[in-house]
Image (cartoon, rainbow, N blue to C red; front, side, top):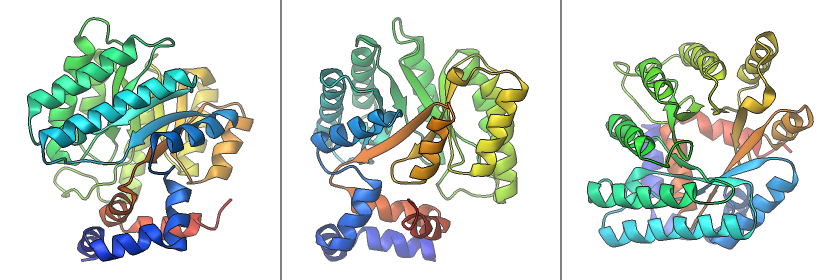
Length: 308
C-alpha cells in the first residue's frame, strides 16, 4: 500500500511542479541530486574530488518510450565523458539499459552502450562504464549484455555491472562475472521482489552481502562495496586487515548526500571512497520511486537530512 502511494506521488504533475519549485524541494534535491545540468554534475564532482573521493556520475532517467529519447540519453552520456576528460575529473559513468532504450529497441540500446564503452576505453586515463542493475525482469538481460561487452576486444576493464545481495541467484552471478574478470558493484538491492527470488529478512540480506563481499575482496579484481551500513563497513575493514588485503584493491561507495560524515572519515582513515552523483531534471519522480521501492528509505532519508 505504501509503495503504491509513493508511485502515485511520483506521477502527480502538480505535486512535482510544487516540489521542484519549493524551498524544501530544492533543499532535498540539492542534498541528494547534483542539479539538472552537466555543469552541475561537474561542479559537484570537482568538490568531491577535492575531498579525496572519486565519483560515479548518473543522469537520472529510465524506461524511455521512444528511440529519440534513447538517443538523447546516450548523447548526454557522451557529453558527460567529454566533460570528465576536459575537466580532468576522477569519475566514471553509471547508466541503466532501459534509459538507453532496452524496452524500445534492444539493438539500438546495445549499439549505444557499446559506443559509450568504446569511448571510455579510448580515454586517457582509461574510462569506465557501470551498467546499473534494475528490477529482476532485467537481471539476466543485463548480465548477458555485460558479459558480451566485456568479451569485445579492447573493452576489458572498461565495463562492469551491479550485483544485488538480496537476490538468491547473486552468488552464482558473482562466480560467473569473476570467471571473466568483470568488475562488480555490490549493493543490497532496492526493488520490491518476491520471496521466491529474494531474501526478505534484513539479517539474511546482510549475511549474503558479507558472504559475497569476502568473495569479491579476495578475487584480485577491483570492486566497489556500495553500502551505508556501518556494521558491514566495519566487517569489510576487519576482513581486509585479517587477510592483508591492500586498501587500494577495492573501494567503498555511497550515495551523494548520505552519510557525508562517514564518507569523510573513511577517506581520513586511508580507505578508497567513491560517491554516486545523480543529476537531471527528473529528480522528483526518481526520489519518490526510490522511497516507494523500499519504504524504510523514508525514515532513513529523513534521519540523514539531520546529519552533517
